[in-house]
Every structure is written in C-alpha cells, then in structure tokens.
Length: 350
Image (cartoon, rainbow, N blue to C red; front, side, top):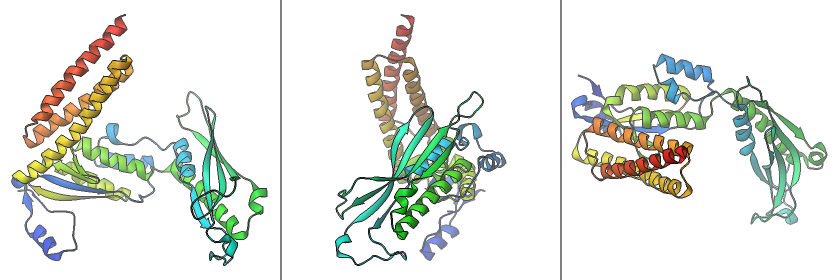
C-alpha cells in the first residue's frame, strides 16, 4: 500500500513526529497542498534544463521554456538598474557631516530613449533630490546602453548585442565615492546582461513551475504559492519537486485528508478561480461583439474557453465533484462563444 508523508517540516517537533508517524494512504487521500517557493535560482542553461525534462519524462512541448533571448537579457539588466545614496559620502561609504548636504540624495537610474526595429537605447542618468524626493537638478547622462538587433531569415528572434558607452567627462567631475558607485552599477548591468543571455531567468523558472502545477498536474491555486493537486498526480508532483530543487527552487507537499471540510475548501477555491476566468471571458466576448468580431481574437477567446472547460472536466474526474453554478455559467459562456463564432464566420463570408 502506497503511503505519503509531508515534505514540509515545521518548527514544532510534536507536529513533525505526528505527521511522520501517521502517513496517509491513497484511499484516505484527497490530494496534496503544494507550496511553491522560488527565490534566487541557480544558473541553468537551456540545454541543461531540457536534459532534466528528458530524464524525468516531463512534457517539453508545453512546459519547457524557450532558449534565453539577448533582447530579454538587455531589458532585464537595464530595466532594473537603480541605486540611491546620500550626497556627500566619504570614500569609505560613511556620510559626511556637512550641513548644506543633509537630506539630499543621488539616484542613478535608467531612462528609456529609443525603441525601433534596429535598436533599443537607454541612458544611465544621475538625479539629485531632497529628502522628499523632489528633484533639485536636471538629470545628467552618465552612460548609454544600446541594444543592436540582429535580424535575418536564419537568425533567432530577439538576437543582438549590447554596447555600453560611458560619459567620462561627466563621471570624472564627481567625487571618488560616486565614481565607484557608477562603475559598480555599470559592471552589474554588463554582468546581468551576459548572465541573462546564457541562463534561464528566475521569472521564467517560476512561471514554468506554476504552469506545470496548474495545468499539467491539475493544480488549483488556494493562495499565492499554495496549490491543491489531486492525488492522481502525486507521482508527477514528486518529479516537479525534484525539478524545482535542481533549479534552486522548492516545492513542499502536504498530504490532504479526504474529508468534507477539505473537499469544500478545494471546491471553493476552484469555483473562485473558474469564476474569475469566466467573468473575464464574458467581458472580452462582449467587447468583441461590440467592436466587430476579428477572427484571430475570437480564436484566442475560444482557446481560453476551451482551457476552462478542460480544467472543469479534469476537476470533476479527479474529485468526482459537481460543478453546480459553475456548470451553468460555462454553458452560458459556451452559448455566447457559439454566437461569436457564427458572427465571425458570417463576416468572413461577406
């Protein structure tokens, strides 16, 4: 008989011992609460991640992220570049005790300048502000980060390279501490760009794990980072837990008893999620009907509706639960969707 113990260990020794001494068997198990935590992930190449998918027999077609793109690495490296420090700081980082400089702050940040088919340009600027963040001087350009796109029939979309040019005349006017801060930020931008074009980002790792739990393992989000996964997907959840660990993330499984209270909790969470999806669909269908149905947008709406239908079917199969009001709402949206599809076909015929 297969039994399940929680992966999670609490600070309460008595609770830990109780959970370990009383594992749940499949007959008494409703499913698992999966707790997902993604912080600073490991540097993982696309080929390495693909090899893990293959070794664990995971679905690459639907859930393996695409290869890193240089344009995304540029956007991330420059978009998050920002640092603040007090005006009048000693070279060792301590604050100078000068009355006229009290409460004034320097902010180094990136400003968007140009985006077109050939390039993206952002400037690193220096802004002086008082303690209320009210600007006291105009921004001064300290460096320019330019992403030059590489475009061609055999070149992957998003290819390109970044050039970073310093405005040495402006930088040399500043004191030693500020020059050190500027150099450190520019160095970080360059390092983040190189890392981002080689490795899968933490954001994409997090999305990969969330999508696999929600769609591949039939997960129902209970709250941010917590999902109910039906017991039928216990083995898959175990594989995802191993995958998360290799990425530097964490998935902890807590077995959930098959009781009326737990089924009600899961049912409420499912109805809330599907209700939000159906509300959004109803609004978008109404907009499309008002604006005049466009075929490609209707196809996207239909794909979203099909996903909701599939999730409802999976929920019923996994838990043997009735959908109640949710089923009635799905039928209503189905009718609206059919009318919209007919309207689209009619417009095409004309």
